[in-house]
Image 1 (cartoon, helix red, strand yellow):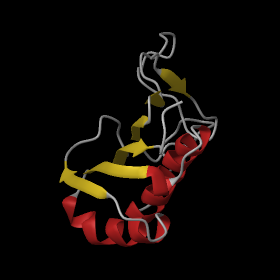
Image 2 (cartoon, helix red, strand yellow):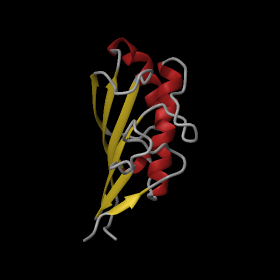
Image 3 (cartoon, helix red, strand yellow):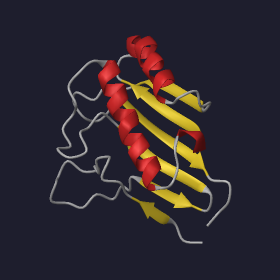
Length: 137
């Protein structure tokens, strides 16, 4: 069974800081009934610039980008079974968690949230996920 590369114009494609080099990173890969979505951050999908703002603003943009990739694969947050979150500043957890709760619309997921240093200046949150479909294509 071949893996299927999923792309969305509603989320940025990144991977290398050298813009002349093609990125080796897919926004998402579907394999059977699994969907693996690369980490999304608060980047504008068109300009690929970090959206300025506090953790609430950056969390909304990050989840919007994630939603765009899920949608391109025919999924939404109801398909997500696991999420991993990196917060630059763990003191942002309470505000992040409230926006997260609002944005996923009552869905339940498993989640790990850790403090760390995302690779790009100004990025204060990054989220990846694994989603499942009822059947394999």
